[in-house]
Image (cartoon, rainbow, N blue to C red; front, top):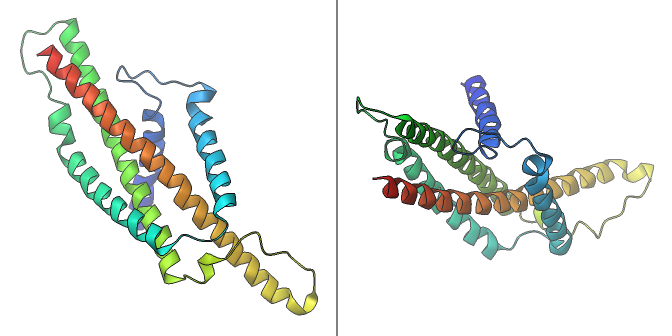
Length: 207
C-alpha cells in the first residue's frame, strides 16, 4: 500500500506542477518565469517571515490555521468529488462541428487541471496540519529562537551541541513548511475559485 501511495503522490505532484502551467487548450508554458517565478517569490517571503518570526507559532495561530485548513480540506474534497460531472460533460450530440469539439476538449482539460491542483492543495493542507501538530505536541522544542544560538567547538558538549543542532534544523524546516505551504494554499485557493467562476461563466455564455 505504501508503494502505491508513493507512486500516486509522485504522479500527483508531477502532473499538478505541469497543469499549473497548462491552459485549457493543453498548451504548457515552459518559460523560466512560469516554472520558478512564483516559487522564488514564495521562497523569499518565507525566509523573510522566518527571520521576523524568530520564535515558534503561537497557540492562537495554530488553532486558527488548523481550523481554516480543516474546513478547506472538507470543501476541496467535496468540490473534487463533484467536479468531473459538473465541469466535463461530453457532447453526446451526433452533430458536432469544430467549435463544439474545441469546447469539449477545453472542458476536459479544465476538469483535469482542476482535479490535479485541488488534489495537490488537499495534500499540502494535510502536510501543513501535521507540521502544526508538532508545535502542539513538542511546544518547548518548537518555540526556540533560532537566532539566539551559536555553535561552540567543545568536545565535552559535543553530543549536546549535535542534539541542539538537530532541534534547530527541525525548527527551521517545520516553520519553512508551514509558511511556504500556507502561501501555496492561499494562492491555489484563489486560483481554484477564480478559474472555476471564469470557466462556469464562459460555459453559461455558450449555452
